[in-house]
Length: 152
Image (cartoon, rainbow, N blue to C red):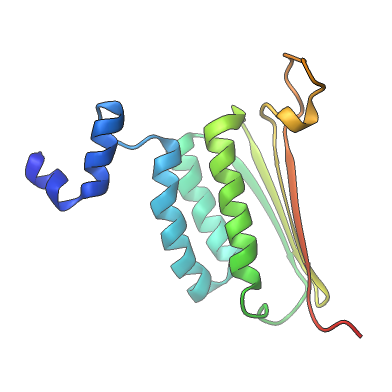
């Protein structure tokens, strides 16, 4: 086991942090996000998100729903897909670590003028709860929207 951990220092870190070589859900998502960037470049944003969601479900047990509406008919301008994927990845990391959600829904809409992604969960949402409230909220909604094309 020591030789194996020596070849994989990231596993040694997990062993030191929680007594196990198996990472927790939040650590498991980091490598898949890095692989997601490769898939993003190869297959595009919708396929990268779907691939990452499958990994997310395996590591967290949280089921997901993905709706994609791609009416653009062209590849996104450089940097757009990476920006949206970065926001998506951070949102799912936060869901895995903090929300206590039992379900995640993602809607991705790509038109010739705009790309919009909405991520919703049904977990605890501090921002959606009144101050001092100890009850369960309806979750958090994260929206990112980027205009495409030049401003005329």
